[in-house]
Length: 303
Ligand code: HMG
Ligand code: MG
Image (cartoon, rainbow, N blue to C red; front, side):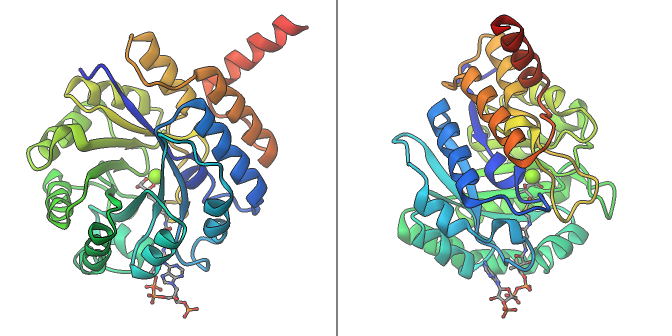
């Protein structure tokens, strides 16, 4: 089991993208700054996608221009095509994320093209990222199941891992978009992916729709995965996966990892305060069990 675990905080992007009411740029910037100060080495800060498809992410350039960049933190942005890549580079992103899927149906709904077409779109993005010296990450949606097609064969995931490796991805995310995976299946998929790509550069991106995310992280740790995505206060959901809830809450993941003696370099209390800040700012209940428990404990101490 890896002793040092990297957590990629995806709340500002995956967490907020599905909010129907526009969250102000000020609030997004404040959230990212709080997360940077909590010690994350990687924050997914924005998306450069069509504002017609995902209006909430339309202010990505402003967000990136206004955040206070902490040395040692990488700020990642999503870019599905060259237009997105140009936005990413103009905003001085440290890492560009291309996002595909292991399911044809989801690829069509999410990025309006087949898996094969998506790879063709990603090719110039990957080449330009290499030329610009920017890190490239590939994300594979529906690696544990698809809201449209149901079961997704492991070989379909492995096929996309291989293609993303050929594109030169530095890191590849195995994403459970709708949170349907269970530990045994997750280990099977992770082991199969690790046969194609270095295990220390594979990550687990688990939505918690069915309450399996922490178990799936533990199962992934057991097979050697050391990078996980999480969303502060459990914010989120994908606009093209109806009913899918947020990512696993970062606070809950940190509590588990630190309790196991694993090292993340992140200050849990700061993340709890960031979770409280964003939940209040957007008027949502806090979806982190650990966040709620600690906030209640702190409030009872001070009263
Ligand atoms: P399209 O309609 O096929 O693209 O959409 P197009 O190239 O034909 O362009 C159509 C219009 O979009 C044009 O504007 C373009 O300029 C504009 P118009 O002429 O109509 O005014 N456009 C753009 N604008 C800004 N930035 C861009 C861009 N590209 C085109 N980069 C496209 C294809 C991919 C753009 C579209 O389908 C899209 O934006 N999809 C968004 C998908 C998305 O953001 N989904 C959520 C993130 S993925 C996720 O959450 C999953 C993840 O968390 C892992 C997991 O949990 O599974 C990562
Ligand atoms: Mg996601």
